[in-house]
Image (cartoon, rainbow, N blue to C red; front, side, top):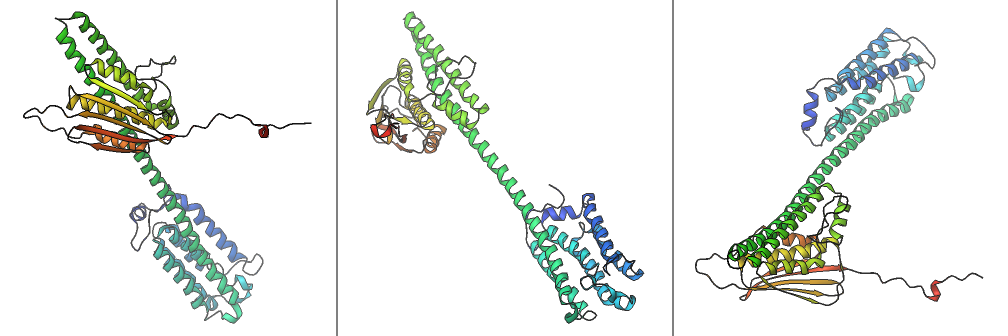
Length: 438
């Protein structure tokens, strides 16, 4: 963004503008300033409709009008005032200093006025606060014709007066429009940066939820199986060996899911959705290309129930209705919800029976996980909601569903309702669908 960039309007100078005023003259503005001098000199030399050397007085006024433009980006408003004053001095004094002033053609009688004023008004519109730009531009446009009326009567030079006013106002409008476009560009860039920041933050939270669900669940199972193996190693070596094999299996599954979750950081959103919706399970091996396994879906619930049961819990899975399609986000949300609920039940109500119920309907699926209240233990604190329940609610909400958490007298119940996706029936052509050719 160049030195003309501005970031807001108002009666006070904008912070970015105040900073740029203190940086001195920008060399990138020299082309316009130099071009203005060329235009002014050409206008002076052609006032009479052909190439004619102007008098010294007109050349002096031309220089006086142009010189303030060399610092127009440093002090826009004072420069507009200086160029307006020099132009007004020419309009008032040139009839007394130049006897041939009336020899100019009608539209060129004021030249080089108001070329310098127009460029100064453009700079004010570009760099000054909006209100200041309008007031300064309108004042300059009104002052010049009013002062010129004494020496150039309106009945003789009406159109020349109108053109002069119009040029000054056009310069102001052009500066304001360019400033507005640059402000919009800066605002859009800021909004894009903020949108990117929000997306990055949301992605971090999503990955944090994934890691929490994976690690909390599998580490709970590993801890339980390690305790069982430690208890059985002296009394039942075969059962202890089986528990240790289950421990190795769950650590491998945890590593696979962590690898899949971390892999999301390197994938585009479309690839992420595809990974979430690909068939596979937490224990699926890596693909031939070495990529991480797909994220789990409701099809892997039996494996999850088997793993939790092997760690010593009693889990009952009940499915009602015909399975329909869920969105990839919904599949993952439902699986993680059940996984988190099982982890919480083992942690806060060990030894109780956990019931998982899936009720499939045409437009939604109801996922319910219930565990009875554990036996009361003196001095044990009541369970409190942690990050798992918060993440559970966020997942369900992101999938377009609703979540209900209840703690009735007989235990704890988690219920989520997730919308299903309609499945189009296979296309079977009818006689009306066939096109017969003679």
